[in-house]
Length: 87
Image (cartoon, rainbow, N blue to C red; front, top):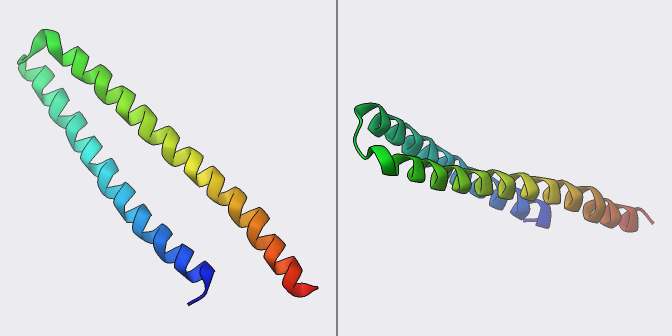
């Protein structure tokens, strides 16, 4: 198994984990909206909204930065290896 195949397999597993995590975040968001509509925890629900939004923002930026760094790694490092092999 080559390095690229191993990297692709690890990426697929990580993408699966990120999709599960994103689904859980969406579920928590729906639960918070239902609690807000029901009128339970009126004053503290906005604190929970704020915590959730901060967590979602950090999660989104982390995954976005990770994708950008992976693109950079693929375009620079793998191209350098291919150029060395070609020489």
